[in-house]
Length: 382
Image (cartoon, rainbow, N blue to C red):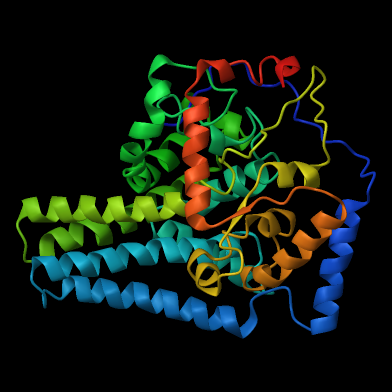
């Protein structure tokens, strides 16, 4: 799996959404959400619930790491403790780092900024996440050349109609899962490092020539910390053979990768997604809000367990429209959004978690057909 260097020429201007919201849909949504918080007296941030959750997850991270290094268990027991430790990485990303980067966790912006560095703690990078996710993906989801999330799996996996078709893409719905197994390895070993160097065209995704020098220092310092505690120390301390260590390390990453992929991929890249098609002047036919509905899906929307584990990312429509609101409110807000969409006769895509995953594989199969090659390049075909 590698970062795609798109074969097409990048768009000259950023996509322009339709300005006039004829049905006043966006304004109505905003008013209803404001009314919800006024009537309930709740803060838009996380409050005590998120404070307890943050302390719990960071404690679980430390405790599971301590148990992993304790040598109290046989190799299989150590491996399962390692799985728990790997799981805490994803839980921290979903529940702490992600909301903190959106200033949605607490009212204190400085505290949010500090907690956003938990991205770095688990091998990612808060600076790059803010640029590629908050500023780029959130502004232009599923739009060719402006949303890195629909291109980073190419050329091995074709997620978007704007990607050039290659003969082996016809089999991608069969082999994609094997590539997904190394997703977390790709994130911590490849993605962040490549995007920091302009020679690999990070400018396309990040909108900058190169990151500031201090961000390079933070990147390499935190990567050193991550690789020290996750690789070097366990390798020196654990009472296992090096073969067992490598197999265990890969097994933990396989588990973590599938967990991450099962949550992150189906929310946009599903069969129902329409993707963004711009005309010759860079204009899109929909308002930004309607575009979100056409390219986002919710799964397990009412599940409190899903909300707890996934940090509300399963109720993804709420998150995109109101990213500065903490995920603890997403179940209630998703009901408001769904009923409002129905009032305005706007399709609200909702599935079970399994249904969303199945829909993703339907998209893979569809994008594996060369009949979809000109979907974006020739808008008249839409």
